[in-house]
Image (cartoon, rainbow, N blue to C red; front, side, top):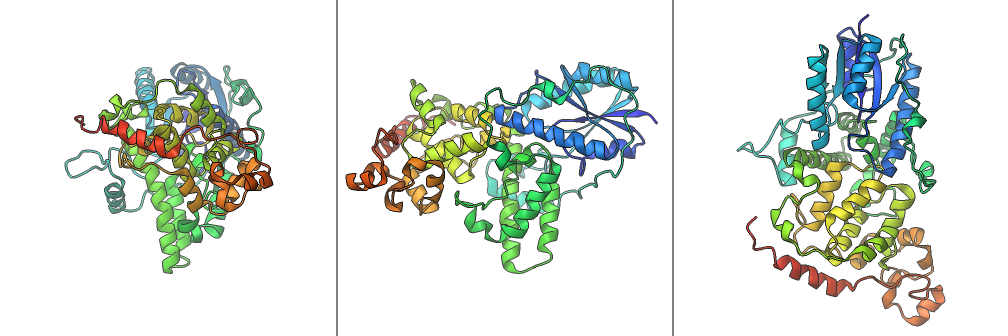
Length: 481
């Protein structure tokens, strides 16, 4: 049986894996391979931790069906040519990626591999629809989510997911350049990720367990609970989707099949609300594909002239460490550092404080999130930061500046979230926990809080900084877009 390489990248699963499926369907003996190419966009520290454990889970899954994962380190093109020579492979199969650097790399790899005499086959596997498959009536890309969502729904259900192979042929020949997973040195050098194991289990099996648990125990309350950070009100599937341990097509079809058992309005509405969030991920990839510069540049060119702060080193560090003196922001940043994840509502609040109250460029926040999030997806991350900063597609209006006090009082009304992550304030009454700087001295004393000693005073005046942000925007909003 002739061999073919199946190149795993952001698709660390056996089920619904078109590259693996079609290699088998065309009669090839698959050689599963992962290449750690440092010329590609390397994951941040938190994502690298996830990648290590996800690769370990994939390798175990492959071994259970009779195969194994070949792990290589080095240039992708050279590694593929080398392993093809070692194994006698005549083709390379892979699933597509959509980030600008990944697209450029895949085009280069495809050209060289094809010119070497190997067949190449790439497949859609990470999205419900390819970014180029539909656009507005004038064929231009969407910039607003609601029309995008309506158009996506009109395309009909996504492709049916593919079953995982029950068995794979063993690897007959040893690849000379193979390295161990540990040799990739993906685990962070400092032990800041020690709590990750208590919050996450990477891998395909864990992704499905999480989806089952969410549908059975959380989805009916999703619409009202997903904005409350103290609750387990969201699916927490984002890192599993980012690493391709589960696909949006699988989620889509499984959620609809689950809802078919109970067609009451509440169930249908809950599934609709959940899948709408999956579509936001699609929208982010649609935007990044059509506007690749938005990975680092604002979609709205007027923001290129925005008067960001010049010396922001100190406030950026306070924000990163969760020491801004703004409780819900500090809670979010500490949750991020401890778990590699942050509730989406709190992400927006933290991003708003950094970009609008502190006037720190959104790219600085995006870089920190990329390094500390286990679900650090370039498309979602760039879109989210530009949305909050007001310079992206479907962006929050420039005058929408999240007030962290009112946001905290609305979505963490009893202070449970803040108490968990900012224990210095755990004895403050709910009335003051989101604004301790306004609490009477006797209340602070009773709670054991001395401002500036036990907990920082705010790094910025919220009202004055809001006014400053609006004035800054006023200086650029009349520029030609």
